[in-house]
Length: 307
Image 1 (cartoon, rainbow, N blue to C red):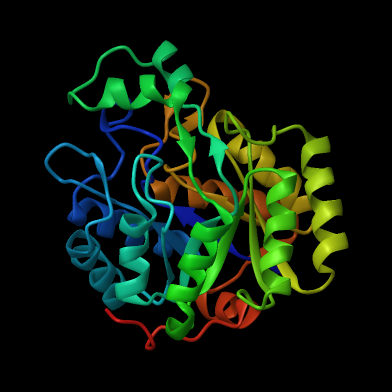
Image 2 (tube, one colour):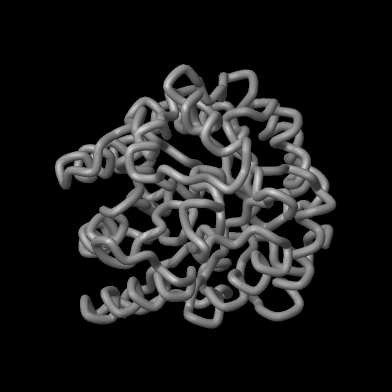
């Protein structure tokens, strides 16, 4: 039976606390949610931090320390720390948690892009905190900066950590950027290519978009990559199901979608993991254990981190 790596993205920076009462915000909530997702079958948990006072995205290493150790103590799940942070942050700020905590995996975006969240204002009218509405409104004039220099800086800074990267590709050109850094030996095979579909500013979520991304990655990387897919918003499960049937690994979680069904909020990250696990097993696929994911991605091991 084929093994599928399931990544669960726990909280992220796209959604604000007012959008769902189930979005983890405090370190305790993030830790508990990640542990529950691991118990539900997640192979990897992808982690952001938030200011516990108001839920604002944060790259404060002290906040990460409050939950990564707890997760590691309670589970053998692979811990993946963001270097994306939020589009409003500097590259130096975004780098610090991965640089200092030396995780097995860290995320890394492969290009600057428009990052439009403003359409969420049509669905959410009331906000708890002063920062939320301006954060969404300002995204129609916001560029998420990830220059070649920025990407190289993050990769070179983490070389000695032996951290592997979840290489996030929001469009076809990002695959070519990943190939460029592979040619420069700043990343090593097997690459974990995380293709992102359906976010405003990136590639769409039509099945033809998935096929185009897969064909291009196959041509560029051959057997030197592991492909994973996430669908943003309400298409999360359908994109995951289609990509799994194509032989892909999958990512789910409240970072990428707050929804369980039309008009129904997902009550936890674990709920989304259980749902995709049901889909995978119906396709005669099996969720990879954390140690199987480590072997597939050639990770350094859970004891070789700084937490």
